[in-house]
Length: 297
Image 1 (cartoon, one colour):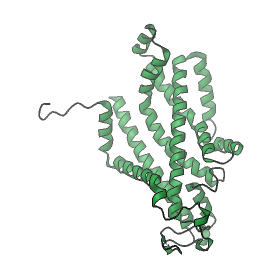
Image 2 (image 1 turned 60 degrees about the vertical axis):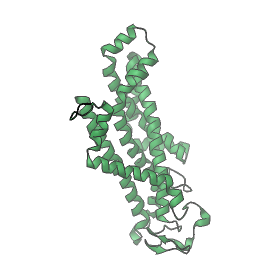
Image 3 (image 1 turned 90 degrees about the horizontal axis):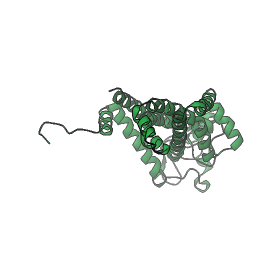
Image 4 (image 1 turned 90 degrees about the vertical axis):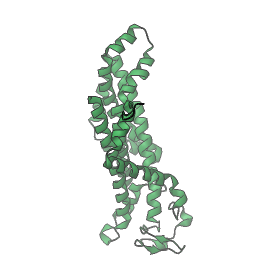
């Protein structure tokens, strides 16, 4: 390599470099990774399993932040009405939030992308039917559809994931179809069709890779949206069961005590939920800006 001449970067390397040059995006990424690590190692570092009835003491209920416990540790964020350590509950709730958000976003992205690309490639009546279904899906409020699904399926983490996949796949399908339509008209696709290359190879080797950049951005934002929806559904009593950790349930448990001055039962879970969404949005916004700039050049 000649001195003073920077090596040529690949498109993916340039995107990573441009992303990391943003201090706000880097801060959001570090914050998000830290929360993920905390959610993973949480059960081994928290002083209490907040959903093990043998570890709860009703006499410790509604203690203010900084109060000592009978077991010898300190309730740094206080306790709820069941004597549940709020710090432990929030860290456990992080796991549920990330599991629901990431799994639902990945499954919805996979399903929606495949439907959108297939519709764009086939065209004609297939595309028309798929687009009408997508338009119908997107015309209904997301939270209303999710509530109706969970009213039928009942509470549970997997039921929440399934409900979120059903309400989110259409967004991915619309974007994937739009990007695939542009690629579908290009000469290299027509040349491969003339060479009788199998359809699945055209879909997966050419159309799919070109659809990924905008879909990655949407998946990042939709993950935050899924976490918010799960918290909303749990707050309304149709999300995860009360025997499982959830930020939405913790907020709901403390809602009735806000006016009595016991703010910490709802405030700290709500603050953690806000931090998660802010971190995800910081990363998603910078990804969108970087990818849009690269695609315009």
